[in-house]
Image 1 (cartoon, rainbow, N blue to C red):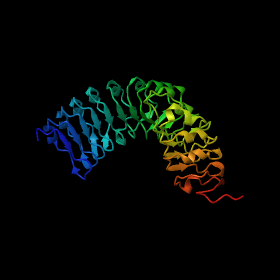
Image 2: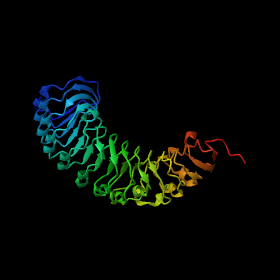
Image 3: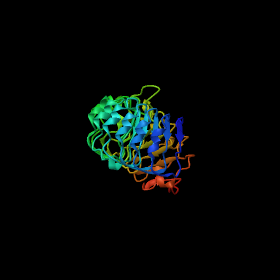
Image 4: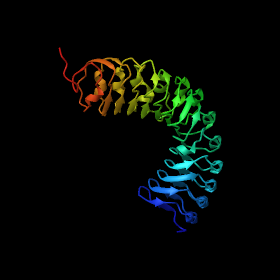
Length: 343
C-alpha cells in the first residue's frame, strides 16, 4: 500500500502487534489506531514514515521502549502514545522532530520519568501531556521559556511551590497540575496568564486566597475562563465578592472550589452575573450566610452543590431542576428541594 496517505482504524477491537511492514507505507501522512487492543512493542521501522504528520497510538496496550527511530519521522507534528504500558526513558532523538507541536505521553506510569526531560524545551511544543508518568520533585524552570499552550502534568508526585515564573508562560490556555502534592499560595504572577481558558489545580495542598486565579488579566478576546477547578486544597479567604464582575470570569461554565475546609466566607451575590455557569460545586467549604437569589436563576445552571457547609435560611425560588443532595448537610437550610421551612 505504498501510495496510502490516510489510515484510520480507531475505536475498534483490533489486537496483536504492529507489524514491521508498517515502515513500507512510505507515503503515509496520518495514522490513527487509537482505542484498540494493540500490544507488543512499537517497531523501529516506524521511523521510515518520514512523511507522517500525525501518529495516534493512544489507548492501546503497547509496551517496551519508545523506539529511537521515531526521531527520523521528520514531518511529525502530533505524536500521541498516551494510555499504554510504555517504559522509559523518552528517547532524546525526539528532540530532532523540529516540526513536532503536540506530544502526548500521559498515563504511561512505567515511563518513570522523574523529571520532564530538558531536551523537550528545544522543541517548539504547543501541547505537552505527561500526566501519570512518574514525575517527582519540583516543576522544572525550563518550562518558563517555552511557548506551550496546553500543559498537563497531573497525577504525579510533584512537590514544592507553584513558582513565580509560571507567569512567564503567557501562551498557556490549558493548565492541569491536579493530583500532585504542590503546596504554596498562588503567586500574584499567575495573573499574567492572559490567554488561560481552563485551570485544574484540584487535589494538591495549595493555600492562601484564590483571587490570583479569579482576577487574572485577559488578552481579549482570549483568556476568558471556561472552567476552574480548585477543589480539595487548603485555600483560605473566601470567594471574592466581586467574582461576577471580574473580566476573566464572564464566560465561565464550570466552577469547583469544593472541599477547601478553610475557605469560609459567603456565596457572592455577584455570582449570579455569570450567565454561562452550568456547574457550581462549593461543598465542604465552611460557607456561612444565605444563598443569594440570583445565583439559582442562572439559565444554564444544571449542577449546584453547596452541601456540608453552614448555610442557613430559605433556598431561593428557582426554575432549575436541582438535586436535594446539593443542599444536604446544612441544618439551617430549608425550602425546595429540601423540606419546607417551619415558621
